[in-house]
Image (cartoon, rainbow, N blue to C red; front, side):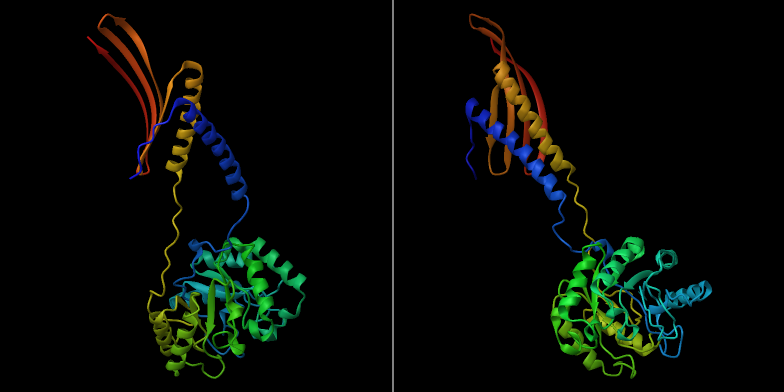
Length: 388
């Protein structure tokens, strides 16, 4: 336990001056700090933990509706979109994976125009109970990756400015290691994160670190979208041990993993069974269907209420200024006592109302601010004392 400290009027005046100066300086510094972002971590109110989507429903080369990625295509009409939403929700989905651009038209699903304002279509998804996960660049065959860095950055700027309020999360692109180096992917992860508080994910070719086995692709990503199968030869639904091994390897990286592309047709029992297994092993979400509801959990950060702390600082500052003024102009006594869990700041003065022979009557006034185990209390005390 710390000793009780009692200080003279002059020394406490000096201390109070320093406190007041420090408070002013601290408020200025705090104002500067609040103006500068110190972290690009995503807001956990937009966590993807528990995400449930099904972006492969059939042969993507034969079926216009084979993948949800083409949902924003300008060749889909409104009735087709609403029917697709119903289909996904019947499969238990909470989110939907969609391309922000797909320029080549190589798939029956059509083209997602990079110049289109997608806000209205994304809002339709939210209004109907599906949260969009926006994939910013399509697979290699779409050809969008070939554009210059300036074009990519302008597209990212435009898309986030127009639609961020309707987007649950972003994926930099599909199978990024097919066409971009590690440094390029890292750049776009950071570029997107600097413009949104939503999560940003990385998706590579099958395997941890993709076909290059380079885990540096995941640097600064909030989530790994882990491709387990090749979605061309029936995937690895039958090879459960390989899927388990791949997931365990990814989990060791310490980045939340969403099991992705482990089935060609996400509405099948086999696909859902593997999705369930991935959840039970530690994946925090699935992209190819499952039956169980729970899959990963993340506590949403609660916003701390600083009202009491602010009131305490203001109380001390006001009392310090008032006490210093009373001491200087009216000869009030200044008080400061402290132990390891208690502090008291204040000022008091005794007025002699009557004094004759052995009889005195005094009027005492005291203003005190106390902090006991982080509990703040302000007190004004008036007392009479005397000898008779």
